[in-house]
Image (tube, rainbow, N blue to C red; front, side, top):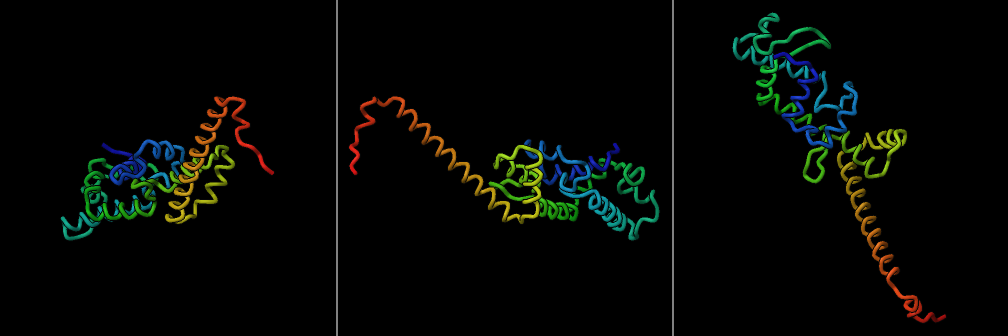
Length: 200
């Protein structure tokens, strides 16, 4: 079965766990196919990984590099050219079991994600999360917010998330206190309002 480059990248995401939770999937689906953050790695890197894997595996079997497309296809069959390329799915799956490929993808995963409460989250998804926590709804404001934080380091992003979570908890506590006070005030008798003497 031959698959498109986009489907190869989706397999990369699956084996690394990049953006596989429901929230991340919803956010990543909003990105353009050209957005480099949509997958754990880029189209360019994907092509490099496949090429290097084919070269290495063919050399291991034949003690020389592949000389033509037929020899290259014996490792992973590739059809078409440039954007229309299709790859043999079984060959890609075998490649994803290779130790060196796993290491390369793990490196990309660490580069493009942040850890939030023990879970790996794509950096672009964490930007959306910050925007939602901050109550940014309008597209123009959302874009401004993303521009502001997109260059943040992993530590800065984690710090901002922590601050936002603490702020939300504080608001919830404060809102509950006001609600409790209002309930007590509604049930209080008129005389109780003058319980305390006011002394100047």
